[in-house]
Length: 192
Image (cartoon, rainbow, N blue to C red; front, side):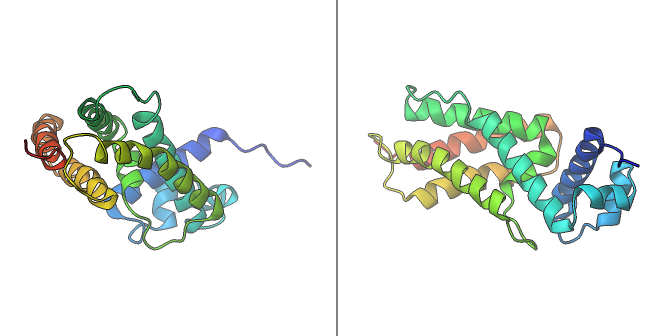
């Protein structure tokens, strides 16, 4: 008797459930049975698709990073000024954080409690190759503050995600993110 074909919908249910739980509670606090219950599947179904919690975490990592790239980096306005690029990037981050919140949170968090597999490491390296030239372009544009790439990344992403993860309504978060956007741009741009 041939094995039943795997349902792609169940894989999606599992990935969605894992992303929601990892975003809310962190990888370490979430159990595989919790993920299966949230997804509405049995443990056997989950383990046939993902042989371990680490394998599932890596699948969520890749899914969230790919979503981040689609939301923020695709169709990049390379000809825009650094300030226009920054504002576009910030707006795209904001849309991603509001429309795909669990994936956005998972995309930003550093993996804790599991090791990235070969595929995840390759994806992270490929995405770094895409974002570093953008940030580096901001750094070397006229009028920008003399900062390192690491500080620029921390200012942009650290500030954005700290504010985006705050409790409150989407309207309150949007107002705080607008204020934070302007403050970060002032920090990046040298005073005249």
